[in-house]
Image (cartoon, rainbow, N blue to C red; front, top):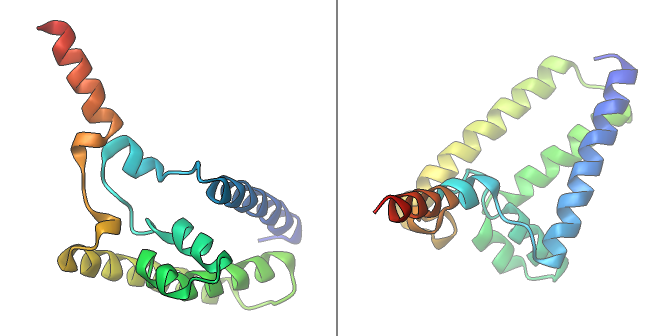
Length: 140
């Protein structure tokens, strides 16, 4: 990464996170994967966890996503890397990212096994399901 590319990525990521944060605080953000397909993603609950943190409700933050501290630390370190305030090798950043992805997938599987309401699959409320129902009803 050149410094110019890092700054551009920093601006894009910071802007996107800021926008999502505002939507979350206003209560108008839903996971696109969950909304469209009815399948929550491994990050589902992280927005609600961060909103819970803002409200100083730590137990709820862990309920919504038990890995929120790991995600938060990685995000902060990655933004510091992009801003040039810390300078680890790109390889270390990539390895940390892959470890985080692995942890997210393991956590996602455990949450499904334990039946967490945060990651329940619900095709019947998805946009795709409703679209197919609408088409089927129109054809009947």
